[in-house]
Image (spheres, rainbow, N blue to C red):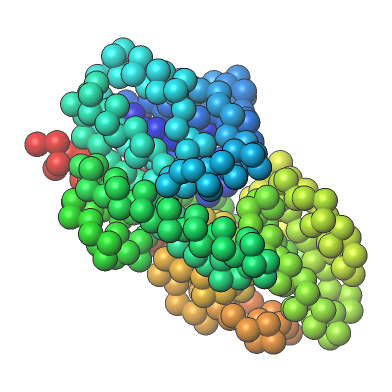
Amino acid sequence: MRILQLTNKFPYPPKDGGAIATLNISLGLTALGHQVTVLGMNTSKHYTHPDEVPEDLRNIIDFRDVKIDTGIYFGAALKNLLFSHLPYNAIRFFDETFTRQLVRLLQEKEFDVVQLEGLYMAYYIDIIRKHSKALISLRAHNIEHEIWERTASQEKSVFKKIYFKILAKRIRRFKQSILNRYDVLLPITERDALKFKEIGNTKPCKTIPAGFDFDKLVAKRERIRFPGVFFIGTLDWFPNQEGLVWFMENVWKKLMEEFSELQMHVAGRNAPSWMKKLLKQNPNTTYHGEIDDAYAYINEHAVMIVPLFSGSGMRVKIVEGMALGKTIVTTTIGAEGIPVSPGENIIIEDEPDKFAQQVASLIRKRDEFDRIGENAIVFVRDCFDNRIISASLAEFYQNHLK
């Protein structure tokens, strides 16, 4: 098959969940002998020079990028709020230059499948229909409006709470407007598949989670520096900021009372100045910024904390952490969409006191820490093998191309 992926963020380097999920399925389909082209928005926020993509990757995937400005500007956001019914999040990705490049590519190549990576790429469905007979699939990486509904529920500022609620309603309306205009739907979790069904999806549906190459994702538990606590995640993403602040203010202080020598390590790009200041003020806390080798960092540290109270979809970093044998303490929303077994391969707590107690228990009981981490490896290998996921997607496409 000849497959075109459209992305609203260039999928290299694969340092966040969306990029990882996008690039890994590209690699999986390519390994099966399919021809994959990626047309990605190379945004001002996450710009990657095309030459940074390794040659061996460019030899097997045809990468095309379109440089666009998706910056968030107060004036533009205010104008959108007052005079538009569309969500500001979405319109930043409705770009004339990208449209021209898409049309040119559809005229240059004939595709069997056009795979839209994320809700906002559905804006281009009419353009694709006009210039291609390809099957159009929407790969939904999350339930977008749910992110903002949850963010609004956690927000203390009255103005921001109102704005986030308006944004959530507009995103939901946008989703309703594109519902069933694609040919097939690819949610990233079974939970998301049910959510789409609830709001009216009638198109063929196949859950396609982020898959992983376990030849590269290898647990090295002998390298763990025990005890210790660590966090890794993009720090310009609000749910990560919110969760980390909650942990530092409500959990870390309790742990310090019992384990005065315990060390906390935080890694993640684009931390705002106030976040850096907060981390610096907390005892025994080291902020590493963006790191070159995330797998080495994860392998090195012990208890992985993922405190999330908003967001949606699948937390790829949790699956990566489990694949690397990490014992993870997270929240209900953090583990949402991943068919984990609490107490067996992960720990889930939402209350600060109980969260702290669980971390403390793992520090005291190395055997329990090891048991859960080892179970996590088995679970992820059973559920998230990229070869199996990619083959399943290819078969699904073949069945709907007939």
